Length: 117
Image (cartoon, rainbow, N blue to C red; front, side, top):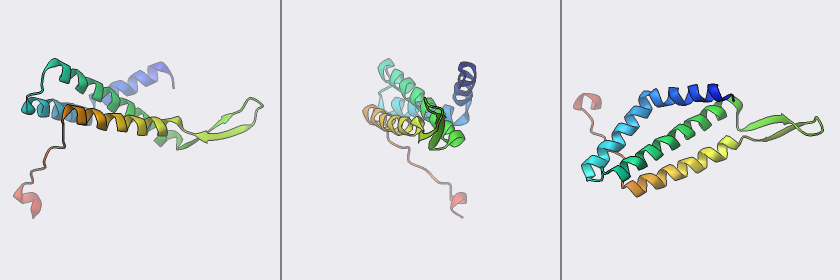
């Protein structure tokens, strides 16, 4: 992937509604728990960078699949696993560890009475 194309994708992810909602939710939870000092806010930034990485891996897997082909040194076609699969799994694991370190838990969902009908 070309550098300019990658930068466009990163910018697109960072402008997405999902990115903004996740970041806002994390910062709000930190504020509610009294852990909104700069150290913890910086950790949220780290989490969001991992979110971007995870999204890039997901897009790569969607585009190229879990197995990719390349041309070997002797000109033969070689099928190997897409490195984005392992990277995505490792990134998700780190994201979960960071949430735990921040003491962040999923927000409780409050349903409207209308949604229940």
